Length: 220
Image 1 (cartoon, rainbow, N blue to C red):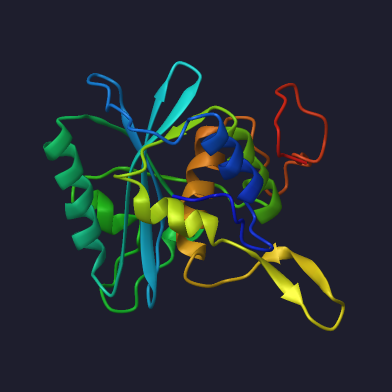
Image 2: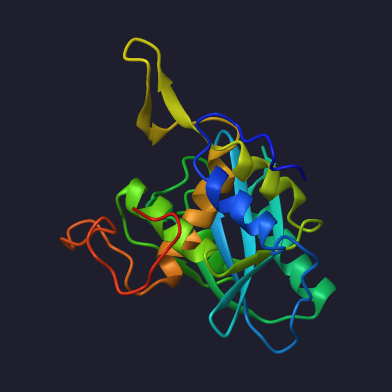
């Protein structure tokens, strides 16, 4: 993948370019005996995205990505289990967004209850400021390697995740646009916030804009 021509307004352009220059977008061996965590973004009328992540020491390893649309939630659970059996791994935490507990109109079950009924125990990530979540991803990327084959689609979508251009003001909005790349980015944000015990939550009074102990190349 070529990161020499960054997309204007891309949220993670610098982070992904840095990983490429450091040789950290490369084949990643899935470590046996190390939990695989998942981060989800759940769509009802649009895409559902899932990242597969191993944490080895202080290093994050993005070892897989899956996205599809128009399928029942049970089909995504099947895909997660397929990854498990194919790579002979065990799962750690399954991080789902904070609105997961809302009920499905058709099934009569919440998106929290459905995975549980199919053998996956979700961990609901508390509500948080999206910009804090973006900074959580940037901080995570500081210590990340990404498999370019199993994560090919995810990498391309992250590269296309952009801030909204405000034509009248001729500036980039502080808020990313909601488009085809959003679900991938939101799934990774869900993992980054869920897995980081220091990540700010709504109502916590903390923000990644405040001084933190761990430095980052990209986090504000």
